[in-house]
Amino acid sequence: MRIDIMTLFPEMCRAVFTESVVGRALAAGKLEINAVNIRDYTLDKHNRVDDTPYGGGMGMLLQAQPIYDCYRAIADSSPEKPHVIYLSPQGKVLTQQRARELSEMPHLVLLCGHYEGVDERVLEEIVDEELSIGDYVLTGGELPALVLTDCVARMIPGVLPNEEAYSNESHYGGLLEHPQYTKPYEWNGKTVPEVLVSGHHANVDKWKREESLKRTFLRRPDLLEHAKLDTGDLKYLETLRSLPQDLD
Image 1 (cartoon, helix red, strand yellow):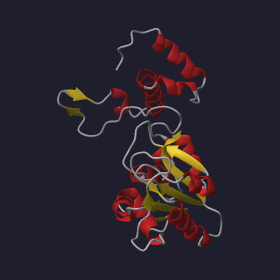
Image 2 (tube, rainbow, N blue to C red):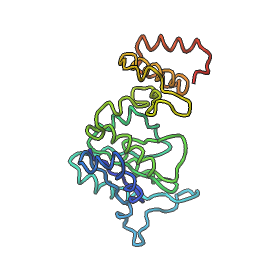
Image 3 (spheres, rainbow, N blue to C red):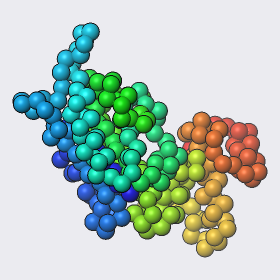
């Protein structure tokens, strides 16, 4: 998979995606990520990429021309048309399900806005979808683009040791992840739940599922509406609903 990030701050992006799991995947050739400087494609002799908005208003807007030419250079180097995402607070909120779908695409281009936004005409010309990482505003699109890159990259085959490494994580199956513990067995007067050291795999799996359901029920009940639940899950949730709501 290839991901190109169109940005005014390529070094900021490279400092993040070359580290940790994604950095190791890059080094191993499991995926390709590029940070492409929009400013390299401006035709302005002063290297400007922004200007004042028509109709007045505060701030500056990124111009259409350097963004479009940057995109064309990326698209022309690709055997297929890339899927272009504009990181914007006006977009749909990124979900694990959407990240999973994006991870199956061969080529993503992420456009990072800056200043007060981007000329609408270039968005209409090249963008396939807009995504947000939350209902708040950031200075630019670089941080959201890096969040999206990490979220998508970790689901590409070979990036993590195996599928289970991410399939048990929060949100992957529509639920929050169960509590986790490591050594020592006792810390600060608190011990690990006995079931986890019992060696009884069926009981461990049952505990993990029920704890995941309970945590989701208490912290993010909205997720249960779309989660994949079986008869046993629904029965356990009914039990939770009948108890005082101070289970955590």
